[in-house]
Length: 67
Image (cartoon, rainbow, N blue to C red; front, side, top):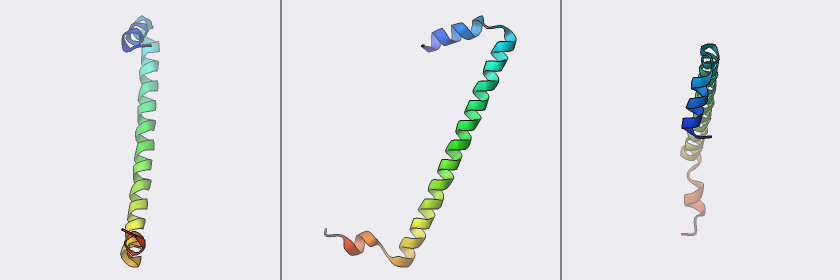
């Protein structure tokens, strides 16, 4: 289904049903924003942990690289 068809179907709905669809879309958008925020926070913690380890222990790649 394309956007034009979706809009056409939404416009055919009664006003209360369109409001319900809008609320559902807002709910999904908020949930996605929250999930993305959690993923970014986890990535930030992982990067900080790795960088702290690297500062304390030195670079594993530098010591074991064959380049």
